[in-house]
Image 1 (cartoon, rainbow, N blue to C red):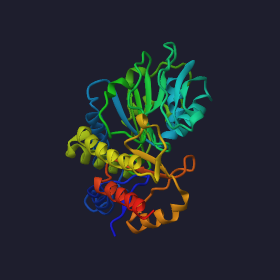
Image 2 (image 1 turned 135 degrees about the horizontal axis):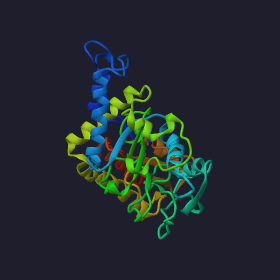
Image 3 (image 1 turned 90 degrees about the vertical axis):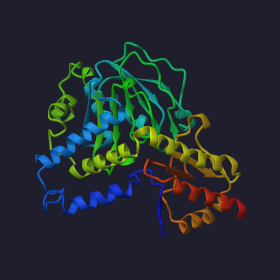
Length: 353
């Protein structure tokens, strides 16, 4: 049976990427496995350099003062690293979900953090708008896409101070002017590769301005100076991320994948809106193209619906406990066909009910 993987993360990956990755586990360098060669050897150094270069190329940031890093510790470690490297007195945070709430908590260890706006009172079902960002703050932090709640920032504020963005769940999925961001971070496991590495893209000229001493492992400048090789990198996660970035480039880049992602989102949201058995969670204008969250209008149909999902090989649709219901995560590698199968099941449920 063909499986349709809507898992929120770790994410679905392209089949050709999985095949190449599996081959490299067995033989990457003249009979040696990718995961047993030295990370200082030329074959892997070339992987790291290619991966970092592809990031800047796909984001349109080549030659614009940015560096790409592949680090460890997940986006959760970036909550801390951002504050350590950029926070001198105070910063502004937009609170749009669980992960931005956790980022605020971590940053408050060091200095004053101000929530410029929050949608917490509505269980994060919308993106706040019309807020002010004080110009005397060290930076402004936002989260572009909220996996749990299915909301996404469609526009970003004009910002006179450095803007930091957690793009863990929608990196490389849509066209943006990425020069508006001074630092971007993203866990690989949502849309880029397997769990184990975290992408950081940082504009060098915002660094080195805090007075505190920064531990070497938490200092972006140290990692830049060592080309993401200050300590042993997660070689497999970086390699698969490189393969995924090559796959995306060969498809036609972000412009091409955005069109496919929009088709998938339009298909699922049309069914949610037209089918009386389902109700969308997120405010319509803020709906994510990556994560569609919805619930059943009649919980008595839950067992029937989930049996039908299982029969069609649909996996990973359960919603987060904060929202309940269902969550269809439609990352870059998920084919339109899979969304079509899900929509057919939803339509069939309506006919049966």
